[in-house]
Amino acid sequence: MKKVLLSIICMAMLPLMATAQSKYIQAVDEYVPAPGQFVNVLPAATAEDTPATMAQKCTDAIAGENKNGNMITLGACGGYVTFHFDHPIVNVEGQRDFAVWGNAFENNAEPATVWVSQDANNNGLPDDKWYELKGSEYDNLATIHNYQITYTYAGEKQAVVWTDNHEQTGEVKRLKYHKQEYFPLWLTAQQTLTFTGCRLPDNAYLSTLEGSQAYLLPAFDYGYADNLPNENAEGCSFDIAWAVDKEGNPVKLDKVDFIRCQNAMNQWCGSIGETSTEILGAEDLHPNETVGIFSRAFRPNARSVLTVHGQRLGQTHRGINIIQYENGTTKKILIK
Picture (cartoon, rainbow, N blue to C red):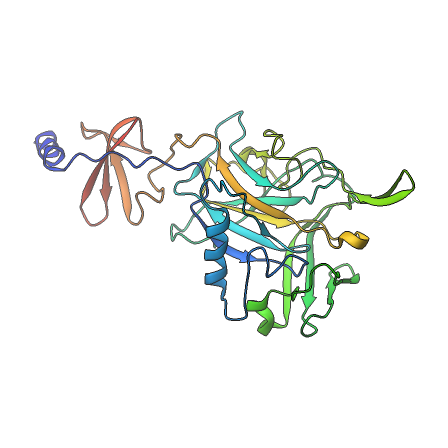
């Protein structure tokens, strides 16, 4: 009788093809840059903006395929952006899972650590545990984990003073080429901005070539955004299997729902200023992989997935899937 009823339900439902999953960013959830020479320009901001309008401006800049090459800045050390796709990024064993595109070129690396999170409470917000992807410098003795830095707004178009949790202080100085306010305009009412994350070793050094001096910023080996040129696809790619907890222990994640890039460099490079990460976009390297039933396509209140024969499964599968919701309704999708 159960099989007959299920068959009737399936026949009554309109056939529905599963919407193809995009391999590009769907939306930016959070944009909190640290002060910097490109802040309030990439993207453009005013004092009337809010965290929500700035997140939308970032979405407009870097979501989708971004054929125009738009970018956003993360400002100085600690600044970050959080974004999601229209589906979870699946951890495929033995493969890099996603790429993050920046504007790095040879001897101009401005590395950001990359963090991932699962929507464990299933509310569609990036408010669960975060895990750092372990890059090449994670175990470097000069790397500082649990690094905290605070910036203080000193007034309109003033250098921004910072202090950290290692009793160090400094400034994000102003440059003659960038005359706008460096502190995020929509956050000046807060007066201070505090970030916690990882500080990587300085990578800049002053080089003398043919009688002239210039700062060079060589790249780290792997595992950071805006570190290697986009032409180096592998160097811009990340494996979810690199995830570690706060103690550095490996964490096994079958998929992630949110990605965060956070500037991990705190250094001043003379006339080129602070080291500030820029982000152009991101890409799922295997968008047709699926895991579980709790992707954005099924939220909220997805309860279980069945085959057309009534067999209950733990995740979606290739072929016809019957998604059951807590209110008793069902939905049929076809995954090719």
